[in-house]
Amino acid sequence: MKIVSLNIYFGTVFEPAVQWVEEQAKTTDIFCFQEMMTNPKEDLLTTPFGARANLLQELKRRLSDFEVIFANMQDDFDITPAYPRQMQMGNAIFYRKGIDVTDSGSFFIYGQENGLVGRDWETIGHNAVYIRTDDLTVVCLHGNSQPANKRDTPKRLEQSQKVLDFVTPLEGEKVIMGDFNLFPDTESIQMFEKHGFQNLIKDYNIQTTRGQFLRKLHPQYADGPYGFQEYADYTFVTPGVEVESFEVPETEISDHLPMLLQIKKGE
Image 1 (cartoon, one colour):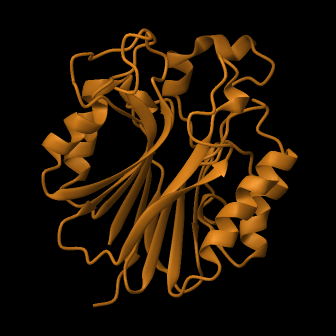
Image 2: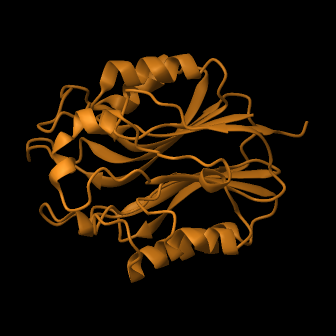
């Protein structure tokens, strides 16, 4: 079974991103997307900051062999008041038709739905979306980006604990993937390792999850207080997950790199 995680950057790098996803779909069973946009009316293609408003609809059309679960975080994300409750931003899981999903849903790990106050990104709610089969749970999450230093805060420690509280009582193996917005040496990350999860970013000696394209997209970061931060995204698996391969390839499709996980799935 192949599972792919990607912060798709609101579809800002639209054609390269969806073309890459289409190619990966030939061999992928589950996609975990963060920063997904959806606009059911489809009469607004690009938002003022360059996001693709109907990204979810476009991917649904191109990935017709997949079922979709979308979990909203924020309505009307950076658009005019003329579109009340017509556009949403959140996380999504696409899973191949034929996978026997026994349960699915979402839960908030930070704040609440529609929590954004003005342009204060520390107030926006963040959630996790999940699917379960008879022997595997896959969780896709997006952690809050503030403060931008990616260090521990009480709220970030609480984020990690909420994820652990959700998965711990579940039977079977677990895969947790997404944009945590954290550095590897934080307690918020090490909490997963202390609970027995394998940190594939560490174990596979991944040097960056942001890549060189970040520097092209946001050259101004070089002069900022935190520079080009190399880490944000992680994949955690329980000990019983047999990892066949794990990679974080350089691509120019987002300001994050994708994580590609191949595991051995029982019959």
